[in-house]
Image 1: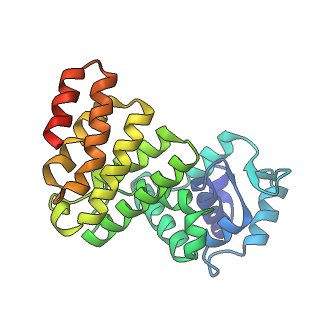
Image 2: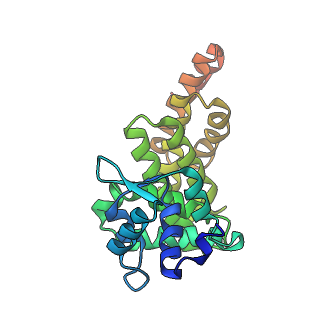
Length: 238
């Protein structure tokens, strides 16, 4: 990090941004992450390669030549500013992406960075937006059988909900809980499941919105050897 401190400030900015994108990143993602007036991306990539900081992989992506170099680049960000740096980077990626991009290539870069700023003083709109993005990321991870990653995103989405979300963000709330129950059950995270299943059964406003919870609850009770409770639950639904 001491050696990096002597590098030109724009190049340091590029290193900090690239460090937040992970061990592997590609050119299009980097272009969305770096403001045009901050740094010329092609010049940054060339300097990064020439300086031995990054290298191009066979797939055309870029990777750090060593994880300690990535860590040193990350350490350029003052510790007290890291949460806001990540959050602003995620927002910038989101703003510079099309809906199609967010559904595919950019989504996890956006959500992973914005989640690192979750403890900032976010307003209600930002909290709701981030909860919705975590729902999207959770569903995307589930579609590729990344059950534990999906559970992490969906739990984060639930944690971001306001206390009155069942009133003011009902659709988002029921979608998050339904997806989380699917994921917790599939991933075998039964302690999380038992906590989460109570919420829709208590707060969902219609029978149809409780069906998914009842379905998984009966499966869970049966798999846990609690057949009597499973039967009682079935009878209570009929």
